Image (cartoon, rainbow, N blue to C red):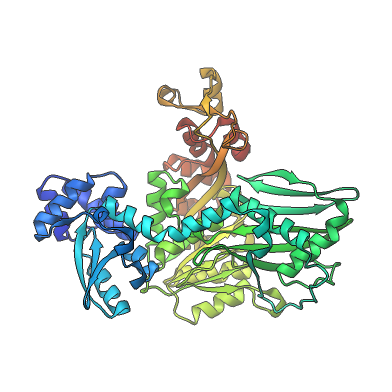
Length: 573
């Protein structure tokens, strides 16, 4: 959205300006960004600490002549959350407070949210009235009353003992109608309990992948946590065939086939609304089948753009590009750099009832309601290109292509971006400039690349320093300048190093995104059409003010979020 567009001020915004709680320029910017992030103005102002929540609530109460209700005065049992679908409560940031006859009173922080009233009225069949609640209290109440199930999920993980491991609700996801043999010979309680415990430990430890690996004289299980593999256990080597058989039965593979790779999925239900999917792949090796499980958590696609680690200017470029009526956004980086989460986060922002969104993926990693997801299968002739052709016959607004792998897919995607569609996709390249040259090398005419690609994001994931044990790094100024820091910025830099404690993995806990976000400006378009190589494009992008991955990483190190060693690991040339 163009920053110069003037948004019409709501009654809430006008009152906040009149009471000098926010300025008009702040209100205009907040209205635009709140709209892009599908938030109310009140939620955006409070969540981003732009204005005091209590002052906002008091001003709104005066403006609309509505008393301010203390939601904490209601007992947990009195809140009739069962009357309204939890998705509606979260979507509209409104919670039912109490019911009187045929009237349902709902708590809101913005009384102009008429859509919440209408939709809740439609779904419940009850007449609805709004009651004003302070934003922070409302957010806490929604988390408190709706996240009981999430808490149950956490408690189940934390308190799961050996006796309950064989009773977990685990089912196969039958995507390709594979043949399943009689599992009686592998349904042994010790094996079942061991495999289930490994899966649970991986979820509790925040792992992204589980590796079951057979060797001539040993067998090991490794987790990938924060991008780094580490060994967790070594079961007896003679269990290898039985462990492989158990995992193949769980993912509905053919247990009699040991010579060819197979793919499958497992769904583990840990609460009524929370399930974890595992994407399973087997690979015949010299001493048995290596099996890798990719852990797919649907909540990763709903954590919001602010959780991804974009700088403010980078976030604005991303949001502006997404809300253009047409064009192409490309997200690039190596495997495991978070490209899929970035795309899903963008799709989640664009996922409204007004848009027709379709995605072609290989495989579909996370199911998203409201998006028409297609699982690409070359076995039956359903390629990315074929899926794209079908999308274009179904009047799409937004198209997501899991990966551009060949000229045919690239040509159709480019054509879609030129004819009124927003196209999002990924490429395996190391930088934004190399992404452009990769398209040119595929055979796409320079003019088509220059006029269709609107934004390129190159990204990496670096391990985040543990806040419990990280300590300041005593490094000479000369060393820091040699690494790429600007001398003027060193005075305020908070450069830290990992130590390690019982709360983290070697001084790190979690990961943070590092991004190079480049908007294709008229100058860059001209360089593309003139045949400029990746070095020329990278230099022009830097001169235009777009930080490369190295500079973005150094920013994260200067903020104390990660270490200089980690930045060197993920951004080395």
